[in-house]
Image (cartoon, rainbow, N blue to C red):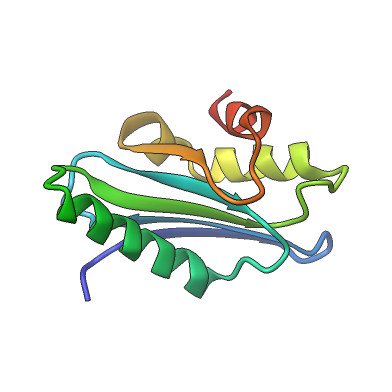
Length: 116
């Protein structure tokens, strides 16, 4: 298994968890999607990042894979708060080496909120 970087946050009182997995760590730039769903787990996000890396490598891309996963409902009225918490925890990676797009459950406004 390749090395990967993982950032995890949890707000037990709100029932919220989020993860950013960057795989492999030796690449200068990584990218992948952001999944927002109540069924998200750390293991799922690790697997998705690994699969993203394999998919990119299969196309000869020089970048690594990454995935973000937020265990939350896309309709949760607290979602903006959760997105803000996630963005703060991942600020260094998201401002220097990791580009996130959309995945299941994410809409463009949610992605924009993380980027802001």
